[in-house]
Amino acid sequence: QEKKKNKREKENDNIIHDKDPLNNMIFRILRDHERDPEEMMVFIRDNEKAPEDLTLPLLMGRLMELELEDRVCCHGGMYYLPDV
Image (cartoon, rainbow, N blue to C red):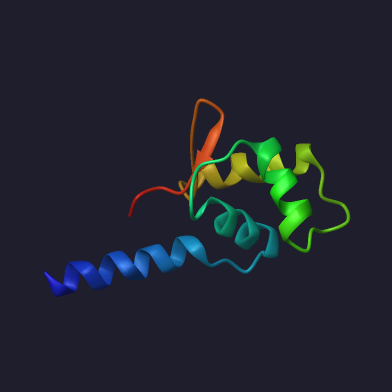
């Protein structure tokens, strides 16, 4: 039982942490609840140190990459972190 719990926590750490600052921003934003890309842009501008070149198309492209890597999920245009 304890080994399964530790494995889940380790896998969750791998999802939440990344070398790329934008990915980490996305993971922080999605940690609490699902959001659509436009809501994420507003949140980033209001609460994060956004890269100057961050645009909605760039954010959406990154979300699609993370979705293909199974690091975020999308349903009905809303992005969220997968359950691990």
